[in-house]
Image (cartoon, rainbow, N blue to C red; front, side, top):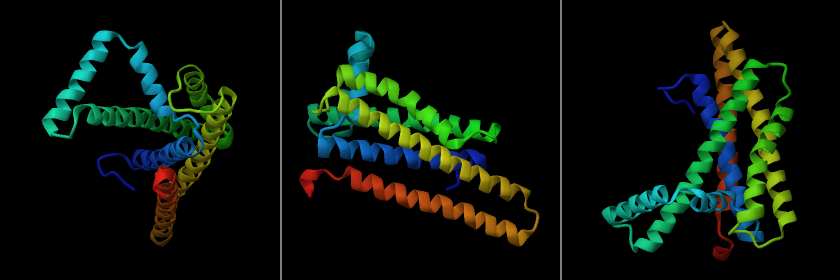
Length: 218
C-alpha cells in the first residue's frame, strides 16, 4: 500500500501498523465474545467518561445526539451507543498506530536494536494502562482480575513482537530498494516489498474478520 501524498517510508509504516493493530483488535473482540475477556477499547472509553469534566462530556454527548438526528441513524439511544463504540475503537486504534510508527522510527535510527525486544517493551508499555483499566473499570469482562491481566499482557506483548519483526523486515526491503542501482533488480525488490505488504494485509484481514464474528451468529 502506498499513499501518494505521503513519503513511501511513512505510508508503508502506516499500512503495516494499521494491519497489525487491526488484527490485535480482532483478537481482543473475539476473546470478549467467546470467553468474556476484556475488550480494552470499550473499557478505556468507559473510564474516560467517568473521569472527564462534566462540561466536556456533556458537549461530546450533545454532538453525538445532534449527529444521530441529523443523519437519521435511527433511535437516538441505540445510535448514540454505536457512535460511542466507534469512537472508542477508532481512538485506541490511532494510539496503537502512532505507537507502532514510533517503534518503526526507532528501528530505522537504531539499526542494531533487536526488533523483538523493542516490540516487547512497546507491548508492555501499552499493556500496563490497559491492565490497570481492566482491573478497576472493566465493564466487558466476566472473568477474574488475574485472567484479565494475563490476557491483556500476552496479547499486547505478541502484538509488539510481531510489529517489531515486520517493521524490521519492511525496513530491510526499503534499504535494499534504495541501494540497488540495477533496474531489473530494483523491480524484483519492489515486488518483494509489495509481496510483504499484500501478504500482511491478507493475513491481518482474515484474522480480523474471524475475530469479529459474533459467536451468536455461528
